Image (cartoon, rainbow, N blue to C red; front, side):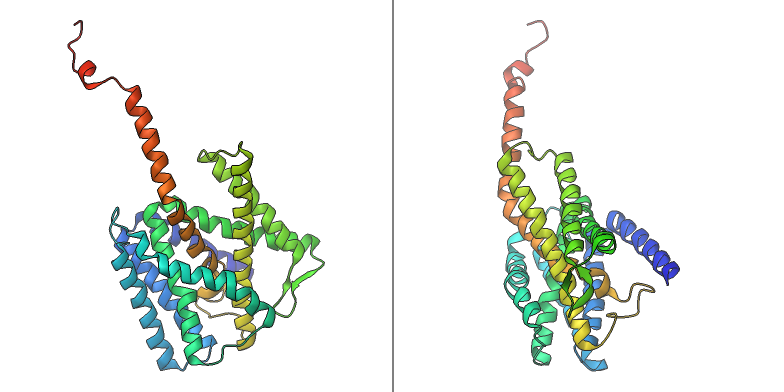
Amino acid sequence: MLKARVVTALILLAGLLSSLFLLPSLGWLLFAALVCGGAALEWGAMVGFGPAPRRVYALLLGCMCLAGGLVAGLHVPGSVAPFALTPVYALSALFWLLCVPFWLRARWKLPGAGAAALVGFVLLVPPSLAIAHLRLLSPWLLLGVMAAVWVADIAAYFTGRAFGRRKLAPSISPGKSWEGAYGAIVGVGVYGLACLSYIGYPLGEPGRLFLALVGLVAFTAVSIIGDLFESMVKRQAGVKDSGTLLPGHGGILDRIDSLTSTLPLSSTVVIALAPISCKRQYTVTEKIAKAMPSDSASTRPIGA
């Protein structure tokens, strides 16, 4: 099992990195739609859809992801219309921040096929669009967000194994502990501050440092919530994994459970900060222009 898990992880990582940096924007959008459809197929199986309905549902969600990406301009660099994505991201944010915490506490079950289909849409389409959106802005940005989720998972696993005593959600995921969650917060905090320092974020300013720490803690919490939500649905469905596509790892949903919650919120933050980033870029450009010689001076003959 361990060998299969390692081999699958290496193949997935190689495929992800090559696709992330080599595929054109339209090709990456098609990849995101394919992931959305594959995950929807697994979701349909977990919530009790029959073979034919789950295929139709998977095709529908994949096509919706592709259509949404085309409308938002995610297939052409420089043409992205982020405000076209804002309602989708907002719906996802409301779901993860206001609904899921109570859902986990009460351990509600999906009341029917209609509710299951709607939750599947909110669960899968926004993060699939966010994958295309963040990659269009920068492959490194998307990789950085995904790496933060991986850091959270790894830190939680090893910290939980070494120090885990108090169960985080024993009726949902018995293996998770509060100590593991604290380890994830520390791991993501160190990783996030290192990344922010590298890109020149002013960590020396107390207010900015506080905002960064709050954001990193919130990111980690949402990542854990996404993981717990899928664990709850699997437990209610009576299955260990969402699928069998990935040997040693389960299905697509098992690999993207934390990304379903973190990617849309990360894209929301990017959209919210876009005007500030543009303003800063304008200020820097203005300063450079003032430092440069004027047109008249630059066109003056040498020695004049």
